[in-house]
Image 1 (cartoon, rainbow, N blue to C red):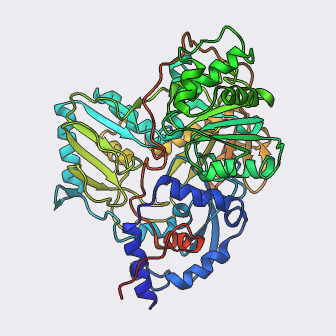
Image 2: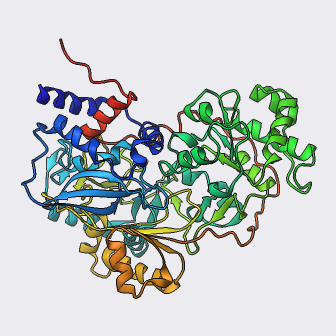
Image 3: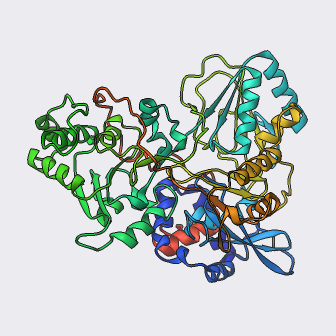
Length: 570
Protein backbone atom coordinates (compact mmCIF):
# COMPACT_ATOMS: atom_id res chain seq x y z
CA UNK A 1 0.00 0.00 0.00
CA UNK A 2 2.68 2.52 1.00
CA UNK A 3 4.59 1.91 -2.19
CA UNK A 4 1.46 2.53 -4.26
CA UNK A 5 0.80 5.79 -2.42
CA UNK A 6 4.45 6.72 -2.86
CA UNK A 7 4.37 6.35 -6.60
CA UNK A 8 1.11 8.28 -6.73
CA UNK A 9 2.94 11.08 -4.96
CA UNK A 10 5.81 10.90 -7.44
CA UNK A 11 3.42 11.07 -10.35
CA UNK A 12 1.55 13.88 -8.67
CA UNK A 13 4.83 15.75 -8.23
CA UNK A 14 5.37 15.58 -11.97
CA UNK A 15 1.81 16.63 -12.80
CA UNK A 16 1.31 19.31 -10.15
CA UNK A 17 1.67 22.77 -11.65
CA UNK A 18 3.25 24.19 -8.54
CA UNK A 19 4.24 27.81 -9.00
CA UNK A 20 6.36 30.27 -7.11
CA UNK A 21 3.29 31.55 -5.28
CA UNK A 22 2.18 28.04 -4.31
CA UNK A 23 5.53 27.37 -2.69
CA UNK A 24 5.73 30.62 -0.82
CA UNK A 25 2.09 30.73 0.29
CA UNK A 26 2.78 27.56 2.24
CA UNK A 27 5.96 29.02 3.68
CA UNK A 28 4.25 32.30 4.58
CA UNK A 29 1.43 30.59 6.40
CA UNK A 30 3.82 28.25 8.14
CA UNK A 31 5.90 31.17 9.37
CA UNK A 32 3.24 31.82 11.96
CA UNK A 33 2.92 28.16 12.83
CA UNK A 34 4.85 24.99 12.17
CA UNK A 35 7.95 26.30 10.44
CA UNK A 36 8.47 29.13 12.89
CA UNK A 37 9.10 26.64 15.65
CA UNK A 38 12.76 25.86 16.33
CA UNK A 39 12.52 22.07 16.19
CA UNK A 40 9.92 20.65 13.76
CA UNK A 41 11.67 17.28 13.53
CA UNK A 42 8.49 15.55 14.77
CA UNK A 43 6.88 16.27 11.39
CA UNK A 44 9.79 14.65 9.61
CA UNK A 45 9.55 11.60 11.87
CA UNK A 46 5.84 11.24 11.13
CA UNK A 47 6.34 11.63 7.40
CA UNK A 48 9.32 9.27 7.34
CA UNK A 49 6.92 6.41 8.10
CA UNK A 50 4.85 7.44 5.09
CA UNK A 51 7.91 7.71 2.84
CA UNK A 52 10.03 4.79 4.00
CA UNK A 53 9.26 2.58 1.00
CA UNK A 54 10.06 5.03 -1.79
CA UNK A 55 12.30 2.81 -3.93
CA UNK A 56 14.38 5.65 -5.29
CA UNK A 57 15.50 7.01 -1.89
CA UNK A 58 18.23 4.77 -0.41
CA UNK A 59 18.17 4.08 3.30
CA UNK A 60 21.29 5.34 5.14
CA UNK A 61 23.16 2.91 7.29
CA UNK A 62 22.62 3.21 11.01
CA UNK A 63 24.97 5.54 12.80
CA UNK A 64 25.24 8.72 14.84
CA UNK A 65 22.93 11.58 13.84
CA UNK A 66 24.13 15.19 13.93
CA UNK A 67 22.52 18.49 13.02
CA UNK A 68 24.42 21.03 10.92
CA UNK A 69 23.55 24.62 10.12
CA UNK A 70 23.48 25.63 6.46
CA UNK A 71 21.40 27.47 3.87
CA UNK A 72 18.93 26.64 1.14
CA UNK A 73 20.49 27.28 -2.27
CA UNK A 74 17.43 26.44 -4.40
CA UNK A 75 16.61 30.14 -4.92
CA UNK A 76 18.21 33.51 -4.08
CA UNK A 77 16.32 33.85 -0.77
CA UNK A 78 19.01 31.74 1.00
CA UNK A 79 16.86 30.76 3.98
CA UNK A 80 18.62 29.30 7.00
CA UNK A 81 18.55 25.52 7.39
CA UNK A 82 19.17 22.93 10.06
CA UNK A 83 20.18 19.76 8.27
CA UNK A 84 19.97 16.42 10.03
CA UNK A 85 22.85 14.23 8.88
CA UNK A 86 23.36 10.47 9.24
CA UNK A 87 26.67 9.00 8.07
CA UNK A 88 27.25 11.84 5.63
CA UNK A 89 23.73 11.82 4.20
CA UNK A 90 21.11 14.52 4.66
CA UNK A 91 17.99 12.82 6.07
CA UNK A 92 15.96 15.83 7.19
CA UNK A 93 15.72 19.60 6.87
CA UNK A 94 14.19 22.25 9.13
CA UNK A 95 14.27 26.02 9.26
CA UNK A 96 16.91 27.77 11.33
CA UNK A 97 15.40 30.15 13.88
CA UNK A 98 18.76 31.93 14.28
CA UNK A 99 18.76 33.25 10.71
CA UNK A 100 18.18 37.04 10.96
CA UNK A 101 15.90 37.20 7.91
CA UNK A 102 14.06 33.88 7.41
CA UNK A 103 14.03 33.08 11.16
CA UNK A 104 12.87 29.50 10.77
CA UNK A 105 10.44 29.81 7.85
CA UNK A 106 10.80 27.58 4.79
CA UNK A 107 8.78 26.77 1.70
CA UNK A 108 7.82 23.09 1.12
CA UNK A 109 10.46 22.69 -1.59
CA UNK A 110 13.25 23.57 0.86
CA UNK A 111 11.64 21.59 3.66
CA UNK A 112 11.87 18.44 1.52
CA UNK A 113 15.02 19.32 -0.42
CA UNK A 114 17.07 16.47 1.06
CA UNK A 115 15.04 14.10 -1.14
CA UNK A 116 15.77 15.94 -4.39
CA UNK A 117 19.20 14.40 -5.00
CA UNK A 118 17.55 10.99 -5.36
CA UNK A 119 14.66 12.08 -7.55
CA UNK A 120 14.03 9.96 -10.70
CA UNK A 121 14.43 13.11 -12.79
CA UNK A 122 17.96 13.76 -11.49
CA UNK A 123 20.21 14.48 -14.45
CA UNK A 124 22.90 11.79 -14.17
CA UNK A 125 24.69 11.88 -17.53
CA UNK A 126 26.02 14.42 -19.98
CA UNK A 127 23.63 14.62 -22.90
CA UNK A 128 24.23 15.96 -26.37
CA UNK A 129 20.89 16.24 -28.08
CA UNK A 130 19.16 12.88 -27.64
CA UNK A 131 22.43 10.96 -27.10
CA UNK A 132 24.59 10.30 -24.08
CA UNK A 133 27.98 11.99 -24.11
CA UNK A 134 30.92 12.72 -21.79
CA UNK A 135 32.34 15.66 -19.93
CA UNK A 136 35.44 15.58 -22.14
CA UNK A 137 33.30 15.92 -25.27
CA UNK A 138 31.31 18.74 -23.73
CA UNK A 139 34.47 20.62 -22.74
CA UNK A 140 35.91 20.15 -26.21
CA UNK A 141 32.71 21.43 -27.85
CA UNK A 142 32.51 24.47 -25.59
CA UNK A 143 36.21 25.30 -26.01
CA UNK A 144 35.74 25.15 -29.78
CA UNK A 145 32.67 27.39 -29.62
CA UNK A 146 34.52 29.90 -27.41
CA UNK A 147 37.24 30.26 -30.03
CA UNK A 148 34.80 30.69 -32.91
CA UNK A 149 32.69 33.53 -31.52
CA UNK A 150 31.18 35.38 -28.56
CA UNK A 151 29.78 33.41 -25.63
CA UNK A 152 26.84 34.64 -23.57
CA UNK A 153 26.75 33.46 -19.95
CA UNK A 154 23.39 33.55 -18.15
CA UNK A 155 23.08 33.48 -14.35
CA UNK A 156 19.96 33.12 -12.21
CA UNK A 157 21.50 33.94 -8.84
CA UNK A 158 23.80 36.92 -9.19
CA UNK A 159 26.27 38.12 -6.58
CA UNK A 160 27.70 34.72 -5.66
CA UNK A 161 31.35 33.81 -5.93
CA UNK A 162 30.33 31.52 -8.79
CA UNK A 163 28.72 34.53 -10.47
CA UNK A 164 32.08 36.29 -10.37
CA UNK A 165 33.65 33.33 -12.19
CA UNK A 166 30.91 33.39 -14.84
CA UNK A 167 31.20 37.14 -15.35
CA UNK A 168 35.00 37.09 -15.50
CA UNK A 169 34.98 34.37 -18.13
CA UNK A 170 32.41 36.19 -20.27
CA UNK A 171 34.47 39.38 -20.09
CA UNK A 172 37.74 37.66 -21.01
CA UNK A 173 36.08 35.91 -23.93
CA UNK A 174 34.54 39.11 -25.30
CA UNK A 175 31.01 37.93 -24.65
CA UNK A 176 28.41 39.12 -22.17
CA UNK A 177 27.18 38.17 -18.70
CA UNK A 178 23.42 38.36 -18.11
CA UNK A 179 21.04 37.75 -15.21
CA UNK A 180 17.53 36.32 -15.00
CA UNK A 181 16.21 38.53 -12.21
CA UNK A 182 13.51 37.67 -9.67
CA UNK A 183 10.29 39.76 -9.70
CA UNK A 184 11.39 41.42 -6.45
CA UNK A 185 14.64 42.51 -8.08
CA UNK A 186 12.96 43.69 -11.28
CA UNK A 187 10.73 45.99 -9.23
CA UNK A 188 13.84 48.09 -8.47
CA UNK A 189 14.65 48.63 -12.16
CA UNK A 190 13.01 52.10 -12.38
CA UNK A 191 15.06 53.34 -9.41
CA UNK A 192 18.25 52.10 -11.08
CA UNK A 193 17.36 54.15 -14.16
CA UNK A 194 16.56 57.27 -12.13
CA UNK A 195 19.36 57.15 -9.55
CA UNK A 196 22.16 55.14 -11.15
CA UNK A 197 22.19 52.83 -8.10
CA UNK A 198 22.11 49.18 -9.22
CA UNK A 199 18.81 47.42 -8.54
CA UNK A 200 20.69 44.57 -6.86
CA UNK A 201 21.93 46.89 -4.10
CA UNK A 202 18.49 48.23 -3.12
CA UNK A 203 16.09 46.87 -0.53
CA UNK A 204 12.87 47.66 1.37
CA UNK A 205 13.14 48.84 4.97
CA UNK A 206 9.84 47.21 5.94
CA UNK A 207 10.82 46.96 9.58
CA UNK A 208 10.74 50.75 10.02
CA UNK A 209 7.80 51.56 7.74
CA UNK A 210 4.44 52.49 9.26
CA UNK A 211 2.35 52.30 6.09
CA UNK A 212 2.97 49.84 3.28
CA UNK A 213 0.94 50.22 0.09
CA UNK A 214 1.12 47.17 -2.12
CA UNK A 215 0.05 47.38 -5.74
CA UNK A 216 -0.72 43.71 -6.31
CA UNK A 217 2.48 42.44 -4.70
CA UNK A 218 1.50 39.32 -2.70
CA UNK A 219 3.32 40.41 0.45
CA UNK A 220 1.56 37.91 2.72
CA UNK A 221 1.76 35.09 0.18
CA UNK A 222 5.46 34.63 0.83
CA UNK A 223 6.72 37.51 -1.32
CA UNK A 224 10.42 38.02 -0.76
CA UNK A 225 12.08 35.87 1.88
CA UNK A 226 9.45 33.43 3.21
CA UNK A 227 8.14 34.55 6.58
CA UNK A 228 9.67 38.03 6.67
CA UNK A 229 6.52 40.04 5.93
CA UNK A 230 4.13 37.53 7.47
CA UNK A 231 5.93 37.65 10.79
CA UNK A 232 6.23 41.44 10.72
CA UNK A 233 2.51 41.78 10.00
CA UNK A 234 1.63 39.28 12.73
CA UNK A 235 3.69 41.25 15.23
CA UNK A 236 2.69 44.79 14.19
CA UNK A 237 -0.73 44.85 12.60
CA UNK A 238 -2.77 41.70 12.07
CA UNK A 239 -6.28 41.92 13.53
CA UNK A 240 -5.93 45.45 14.92
CA UNK A 241 -8.30 48.29 13.97
CA UNK A 242 -5.47 50.84 14.15
CA UNK A 243 -2.26 48.82 13.82
CA UNK A 244 1.26 50.05 14.32
CA UNK A 245 1.93 48.97 10.74
CA UNK A 246 -0.78 49.67 8.18
CA UNK A 247 -0.84 47.36 5.17
CA UNK A 248 -3.01 48.58 2.30
CA UNK A 249 -3.44 46.06 -0.51
CA UNK A 250 -4.50 47.40 -3.92
CA UNK A 251 -5.67 44.37 -5.84
CA UNK A 252 -8.22 43.33 -8.43
CA UNK A 253 -9.23 40.23 -6.47
CA UNK A 254 -9.58 39.14 -2.86
CA UNK A 255 -6.17 37.50 -2.70
CA UNK A 256 -4.72 35.99 0.46
CA UNK A 257 -2.80 39.22 1.06
CA UNK A 258 -5.88 41.37 0.38
CA UNK A 259 -7.97 39.30 2.80
CA UNK A 260 -5.43 39.68 5.61
CA UNK A 261 -4.39 43.30 4.99
CA UNK A 262 -5.56 46.25 7.08
CA UNK A 263 -7.45 47.58 4.07
CA UNK A 264 -8.17 46.14 0.64
CA UNK A 265 -8.72 48.58 -2.22
CA UNK A 266 -10.42 46.74 -5.07
CA UNK A 267 -9.61 48.00 -8.56
CA UNK A 268 -10.05 46.78 -12.11
CA UNK A 269 -7.41 44.30 -13.27
CA UNK A 270 -4.56 45.94 -15.12
CA UNK A 271 -5.33 49.46 -13.84
CA UNK A 272 -2.52 49.67 -11.27
CA UNK A 273 -0.50 52.15 -13.32
CA UNK A 274 -3.54 54.38 -13.85
CA UNK A 275 -4.38 54.39 -10.14
CA UNK A 276 -0.75 55.20 -9.28
CA UNK A 277 -0.97 58.27 -11.52
CA UNK A 278 -4.30 59.27 -10.00
CA UNK A 279 -2.95 58.79 -6.49
CA UNK A 280 0.02 60.99 -7.33
CA UNK A 281 -2.34 63.66 -8.64
CA UNK A 282 -4.40 63.48 -5.44
CA UNK A 283 -1.27 63.79 -3.28
CA UNK A 284 -0.18 66.90 -5.18
CA UNK A 285 -3.67 68.42 -5.35
CA UNK A 286 -4.10 68.22 -1.59
CA UNK A 287 -0.55 69.47 -0.87
CA UNK A 288 0.33 66.18 0.84
CA UNK A 289 3.73 66.02 -0.91
CA UNK A 290 6.19 68.72 -2.08
CA UNK A 291 4.83 70.75 -5.00
CA UNK A 292 8.03 70.48 -7.07
CA UNK A 293 7.38 66.80 -7.77
CA UNK A 294 6.53 65.70 -11.35
CA UNK A 295 2.85 66.02 -12.23
CA UNK A 296 1.08 63.11 -13.96
CA UNK A 297 -0.53 63.88 -17.30
CA UNK A 298 -3.50 61.68 -16.40
CA UNK A 299 -6.31 63.50 -14.62
CA UNK A 300 -8.04 62.22 -11.51
CA UNK A 301 -11.19 61.68 -13.55
CA UNK A 302 -9.31 59.53 -16.08
CA UNK A 303 -7.68 57.54 -13.32
CA UNK A 304 -11.05 57.07 -11.63
CA UNK A 305 -12.62 55.76 -14.82
CA UNK A 306 -9.84 53.24 -15.48
CA UNK A 307 -9.43 51.97 -11.92
CA UNK A 308 -13.12 51.81 -11.07
CA UNK A 309 -12.77 54.03 -7.98
CA UNK A 310 -14.47 57.35 -7.40
CA UNK A 311 -12.40 60.53 -7.44
CA UNK A 312 -13.17 61.10 -3.77
CA UNK A 313 -12.09 57.54 -2.94
CA UNK A 314 -8.71 58.20 -4.59
CA UNK A 315 -8.35 61.45 -2.61
CA UNK A 316 -9.21 59.57 0.57
CA UNK A 317 -6.60 56.91 -0.26
CA UNK A 318 -3.99 59.66 -0.72
CA UNK A 319 -4.74 61.03 2.75
CA UNK A 320 -4.63 57.53 4.20
CA UNK A 321 -1.18 56.85 2.71
CA UNK A 322 0.43 59.84 4.43
CA UNK A 323 -1.56 59.63 7.69
CA UNK A 324 1.07 57.37 9.26
CA UNK A 325 4.62 57.70 8.01
CA UNK A 326 7.14 56.53 6.88
CA UNK A 327 5.09 55.26 3.96
CA UNK A 328 6.41 52.80 1.39
CA UNK A 329 4.92 51.67 -1.92
CA UNK A 330 5.63 48.20 -3.33
CA UNK A 331 4.97 47.11 -6.90
CA UNK A 332 4.43 43.59 -8.18
CA UNK A 333 6.79 44.25 -11.06
CA UNK A 334 8.78 47.04 -12.69
CA UNK A 335 5.90 49.52 -13.18
CA UNK A 336 7.56 52.98 -13.24
CA UNK A 337 4.36 54.86 -12.32
CA UNK A 338 4.05 52.87 -9.09
CA UNK A 339 7.77 53.29 -8.40
CA UNK A 340 7.43 57.06 -8.88
CA UNK A 341 5.06 57.24 -5.90
CA UNK A 342 8.02 56.52 -3.62
CA UNK A 343 9.79 59.52 -5.13
CA UNK A 344 6.80 61.75 -4.29
CA UNK A 345 6.60 60.33 -0.77
CA UNK A 346 10.32 60.94 -0.13
CA UNK A 347 10.87 57.25 0.54
CA UNK A 348 14.14 56.86 -1.36
CA UNK A 349 17.14 56.47 0.93
CA UNK A 350 15.15 57.18 4.08
CA UNK A 351 14.17 55.11 7.09
CA UNK A 352 11.14 52.96 6.34
CA UNK A 353 11.63 53.36 2.59
CA UNK A 354 13.89 52.03 -0.16
CA UNK A 355 17.50 51.96 0.95
CA UNK A 356 20.84 50.77 -0.46
CA UNK A 357 22.20 47.80 1.46
CA UNK A 358 25.66 47.64 -0.12
CA UNK A 359 28.11 49.45 -2.35
CA UNK A 360 30.14 48.15 -5.24
CA UNK A 361 27.31 46.11 -6.76
CA UNK A 362 27.41 46.16 -10.55
CA UNK A 363 24.32 46.75 -12.66
CA UNK A 364 23.26 43.58 -14.46
CA UNK A 365 22.17 43.11 -18.06
CA UNK A 366 18.76 41.44 -18.16
CA UNK A 367 18.88 37.99 -19.73
CA UNK A 368 15.71 38.82 -21.67
CA UNK A 369 17.49 41.61 -23.57
CA UNK A 370 18.27 40.93 -27.21
CA UNK A 371 21.44 38.88 -27.46
CA UNK A 372 22.39 39.47 -31.06
CA UNK A 373 25.12 37.30 -32.54
CA UNK A 374 26.52 34.64 -30.26
CA UNK A 375 28.34 31.40 -30.98
CA UNK A 376 27.29 29.74 -27.72
CA UNK A 377 25.17 30.35 -24.63
CA UNK A 378 26.12 28.86 -21.25
CA UNK A 379 23.22 28.67 -18.78
CA UNK A 380 23.96 28.24 -15.08
CA UNK A 381 21.94 25.73 -13.04
CA UNK A 382 20.41 28.62 -11.04
CA UNK A 383 18.42 29.79 -14.10
CA UNK A 384 14.75 28.69 -14.08
CA UNK A 385 14.12 25.83 -16.48
CA UNK A 386 11.40 27.78 -18.30
CA UNK A 387 13.89 30.42 -19.42
CA UNK A 388 14.83 29.90 -23.07
CA UNK A 389 17.33 32.32 -24.67
CA UNK A 390 16.00 33.78 -27.90
CA UNK A 391 19.06 33.20 -30.00
CA UNK A 392 20.34 30.82 -32.64
CA UNK A 393 23.42 29.52 -30.85
CA UNK A 394 24.77 26.33 -29.35
CA UNK A 395 23.31 26.11 -25.84
CA UNK A 396 25.15 24.48 -22.93
CA UNK A 397 22.76 24.11 -20.00
CA UNK A 398 23.75 23.05 -16.48
CA UNK A 399 21.01 21.47 -14.41
CA UNK A 400 20.68 19.10 -11.48
CA UNK A 401 17.26 17.87 -12.62
CA UNK A 402 15.80 17.24 -16.04
CA UNK A 403 12.82 19.53 -16.57
CA UNK A 404 11.68 18.00 -19.84
CA UNK A 405 11.61 19.54 -23.30
CA UNK A 406 14.41 22.03 -23.84
CA UNK A 407 16.23 23.79 -26.66
CA UNK A 408 19.60 23.07 -25.07
CA UNK A 409 22.12 21.25 -27.27
CA UNK A 410 24.04 20.06 -24.21
CA UNK A 411 22.63 19.08 -20.82
CA UNK A 412 25.32 18.97 -18.14
CA UNK A 413 24.75 17.44 -14.67
CA UNK A 414 25.18 20.08 -11.97
CA UNK A 415 25.58 19.56 -8.21
CA UNK A 416 22.35 18.91 -6.36
CA UNK A 417 21.18 20.03 -2.93
CA UNK A 418 24.13 20.68 -0.56
CA UNK A 419 26.58 19.02 -2.99
CA UNK A 420 28.54 22.16 -3.84
CA UNK A 421 30.37 24.89 -1.94
CA UNK A 422 28.66 28.20 -2.52
CA UNK A 423 28.17 31.53 -0.83
CA UNK A 424 24.88 33.34 -0.18
CA UNK A 425 24.81 37.10 -0.87
CA UNK A 426 22.00 39.43 0.18
CA UNK A 427 18.53 38.20 -0.80
CA UNK A 428 16.51 40.45 -3.15
CA UNK A 429 14.48 43.04 -1.27
CA UNK A 430 16.45 42.96 2.00
CA UNK A 431 17.39 46.32 3.49
CA UNK A 432 20.61 45.13 5.13
CA UNK A 433 23.52 43.29 3.55
CA UNK A 434 23.94 39.66 4.56
CA UNK A 435 26.46 36.95 3.76
CA UNK A 436 26.62 33.24 4.42
CA UNK A 437 28.53 30.19 3.24
CA UNK A 438 26.99 26.82 2.40
CA UNK A 439 29.67 24.11 2.31
CA UNK A 440 29.22 20.84 0.46
CA UNK A 441 27.67 18.74 3.23
CA UNK A 442 26.96 15.71 1.06
CA UNK A 443 28.98 14.00 -1.64
CA UNK A 444 27.50 13.55 -5.10
CA UNK A 445 27.09 9.92 -6.14
CA UNK A 446 27.40 10.86 -9.81
CA UNK A 447 29.92 12.93 -11.75
CA UNK A 448 28.80 16.54 -11.58
CA UNK A 449 30.28 19.96 -12.26
CA UNK A 450 28.98 23.43 -11.62
CA UNK A 451 29.21 25.96 -14.43
CA UNK A 452 31.98 27.75 -12.50
CA UNK A 453 33.97 24.52 -12.10
CA UNK A 454 33.49 23.77 -15.79
CA UNK A 455 34.88 27.16 -16.82
CA UNK A 456 37.79 26.94 -14.39
CA UNK A 457 38.76 23.59 -15.89
CA UNK A 458 38.96 25.28 -19.31
CA UNK A 459 40.75 28.43 -18.13
CA UNK A 460 43.26 27.89 -15.32
CA UNK A 461 43.64 31.66 -14.86
CA UNK A 462 40.11 31.99 -13.50
CA UNK A 463 39.83 32.22 -9.69
CA UNK A 464 38.02 29.30 -8.12
CA UNK A 465 34.83 29.72 -6.14
CA UNK A 466 36.63 28.67 -2.96
CA UNK A 467 39.31 31.36 -3.39
CA UNK A 468 36.73 34.06 -4.03
CA UNK A 469 34.72 33.05 -0.96
CA UNK A 470 37.88 33.08 1.15
CA UNK A 471 38.75 36.55 -0.11
CA UNK A 472 35.22 37.84 0.59
CA UNK A 473 35.33 36.53 4.13
CA UNK A 474 38.62 38.33 4.74
CA UNK A 475 37.20 41.57 3.32
CA UNK A 476 34.14 41.38 5.58
CA UNK A 477 36.30 40.73 8.64
CA UNK A 478 38.55 43.70 7.86
CA UNK A 479 35.49 45.99 7.72
CA UNK A 480 34.80 45.23 11.41
CA UNK A 481 31.13 46.10 10.92
CA UNK A 482 27.87 44.28 11.52
CA UNK A 483 26.98 41.21 13.56
CA UNK A 484 27.48 37.48 13.29
CA UNK A 485 24.30 35.46 13.80
CA UNK A 486 24.98 31.91 14.92
CA UNK A 487 23.95 30.13 18.05
CA UNK A 488 24.50 33.52 19.64
CA UNK A 489 24.64 37.04 18.21
CA UNK A 490 28.10 38.61 18.33
CA UNK A 491 29.42 41.91 17.00
CA UNK A 492 32.07 41.19 14.42
CA UNK A 493 34.58 43.40 16.25
CA UNK A 494 34.34 40.87 19.09
CA UNK A 495 35.44 38.00 16.83
CA UNK A 496 39.07 37.22 17.67
CA UNK A 497 40.49 36.45 14.21
CA UNK A 498 39.65 36.10 10.57
CA UNK A 499 40.12 32.35 10.92
CA UNK A 500 37.51 32.23 13.67
CA UNK A 501 35.19 34.33 11.50
CA UNK A 502 35.57 31.91 8.58
CA UNK A 503 35.01 28.88 10.79
CA UNK A 504 31.77 30.30 12.13
CA UNK A 505 30.53 31.12 8.63
CA UNK A 506 31.39 27.59 7.48
CA UNK A 507 29.33 26.26 10.38
CA UNK A 508 26.22 28.14 9.27
CA UNK A 509 26.50 31.57 10.91
CA UNK A 510 25.25 34.61 8.98
CA UNK A 511 26.99 37.96 8.79
CA UNK A 512 24.56 40.90 8.63
CA UNK A 513 25.30 44.58 8.26
CA UNK A 514 23.11 47.58 8.94
CA UNK A 515 20.73 49.30 6.53
CA UNK A 516 22.18 52.47 5.04
CA UNK A 517 19.90 55.24 6.33
CA UNK A 518 22.30 58.16 6.35
CA UNK A 519 20.75 60.30 3.63
CA UNK A 520 18.32 60.26 0.73
CA UNK A 521 19.92 59.59 -2.62
CA UNK A 522 19.48 61.78 -5.66
CA UNK A 523 16.68 60.81 -8.01
CA UNK A 524 16.45 62.36 -11.46
CA UNK A 525 12.73 62.02 -12.17
CA UNK A 526 11.93 65.03 -14.32
CA UNK A 527 8.53 63.93 -15.60
CA UNK A 528 5.88 61.45 -14.62
CA UNK A 529 6.37 58.04 -16.29
CA UNK A 530 4.10 57.10 -19.14
CA UNK A 531 1.44 54.49 -18.42
CA UNK A 532 2.79 51.00 -18.94
CA UNK A 533 1.07 47.97 -20.41
CA UNK A 534 -1.24 46.14 -18.00
CA UNK A 535 0.48 43.44 -15.95
CA UNK A 536 -1.42 40.21 -15.46
CA UNK A 537 -2.29 39.33 -11.88
CA UNK A 538 -0.67 35.96 -12.48
CA UNK A 539 2.67 37.40 -13.61
CA UNK A 540 4.31 37.15 -10.23
CA UNK A 541 2.86 33.75 -9.41
CA UNK A 542 3.95 32.02 -12.60
CA UNK A 543 7.48 33.35 -12.97
CA UNK A 544 8.91 29.88 -12.47
CA UNK A 545 7.81 26.39 -11.58
CA UNK A 546 10.01 23.86 -9.76
CA UNK A 547 11.48 21.33 -12.16
CA UNK A 548 10.74 18.53 -9.68
CA UNK A 549 8.78 18.18 -6.45
CA UNK A 550 9.98 15.80 -3.72
CA UNK A 551 7.32 13.48 -2.26
CA UNK A 552 7.60 15.06 1.18
CA UNK A 553 6.56 18.41 -0.28
CA UNK A 554 3.57 16.72 -1.92
CA UNK A 555 2.63 15.22 1.44
CA UNK A 556 2.94 18.60 3.15
CA UNK A 557 0.68 20.16 0.54
CA UNK A 558 -1.92 17.44 1.09
CA UNK A 559 -1.80 17.80 4.87
CA UNK A 560 -2.05 21.59 4.66
CA UNK A 561 -5.03 21.45 2.30
CA UNK A 562 -3.30 23.58 -0.32
CA UNK A 563 -3.19 20.62 -2.70
CA UNK A 564 -5.63 17.82 -3.30
CA UNK A 565 -4.28 14.28 -2.83
CA UNK A 566 -3.36 12.42 -6.04
CA UNK A 567 -6.18 10.72 -7.86
CA UNK A 568 -6.14 6.94 -7.59
CA UNK A 569 -7.30 4.66 -10.37
CA UNK A 570 -10.29 2.54 -9.41
